[in-house]
Length: 259
Image (cartoon, rainbow, N blue to C red; front, side):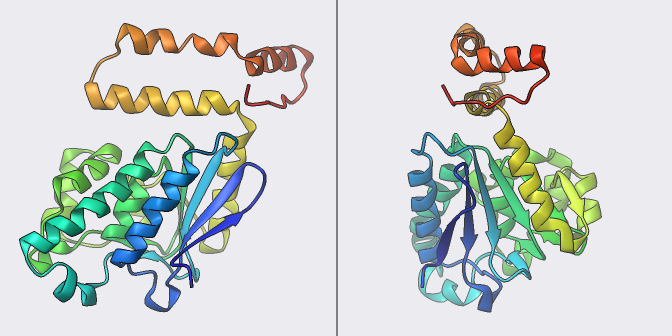
């Protein structure tokens, strides 16, 4: 059984699923490795316009790492550091993916599950979803490279609240604190997430990738270089720009070619 499933939704959308529903999609070392490989491979696909990531079973995105694995894989700093190399590599593969990503969150989204969701561009959850990183109860820290993803979607104060208090937040509170973009009734999560994916796909694909690139570089460096600013004008030389503005003038829906 593949621990990470891939499903083609359309010519432009791929669904990636954490596939361990009998354990609510608790993450294991093989799952982290496979997820990283999947995202590295998908990142090479020039035609994809959106990746939707979810947990199988409909009850949980993921409760985080499987604690039963700790004795063998993370029982001391040496083992934990080795484990962290590929865990962080996987989170980086999701963050660095040039294709827009949407986290479809049903139920539990805690610990490593929340870290994966934080690496996505957009997050859609149900009203009963729950969020948190209660690792203080295990005597564990969130590694700096993992904390970086959390700080990318919320502020310092909220990140500290999550880690220092260790409480589990409701979907409503997660939305108020910018941890998710949309909260909908549980039965509508899949529909809303794919509506979001379709909206992304309706736009010019190169533009979506450029926007991701611009935003990430600005957040990383805190400044806009001349090189980055000039890159913003490349869109005027694309075929999609010609399609886009002419469709606007003729009041027709543009059909972008990714060229």
